[in-house]
Image (cartoon, rainbow, N blue to C red; front, side, top):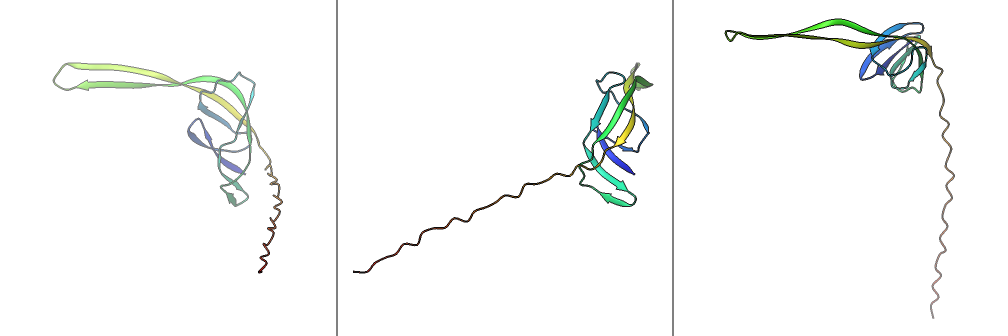
Length: 123
């Protein structure tokens, strides 16, 4: 079973006991987080886009990615600028692809309005 989840604006295919590097999440190491933006689920070939699954994950660490170099240059002008940055990531481990929680919809009991018929007496 796997699911496609939206985490901080990016989509990830997740399975149980999988480790992921996601954009930085402001949670303490060891804390549990839940993701409820499930876009698609696949359960033994049964694909569903409407699910009320909740995925729980544990924060393992906060890391920095590889350095991304940004180089700007204008030819024949003598202009060169080299810059770069490291992206912050959070390493998480998917613990559970939660069970489907069924939403019980209460049936609305509607009562029919009985309108009194006007009896017109002719004189």
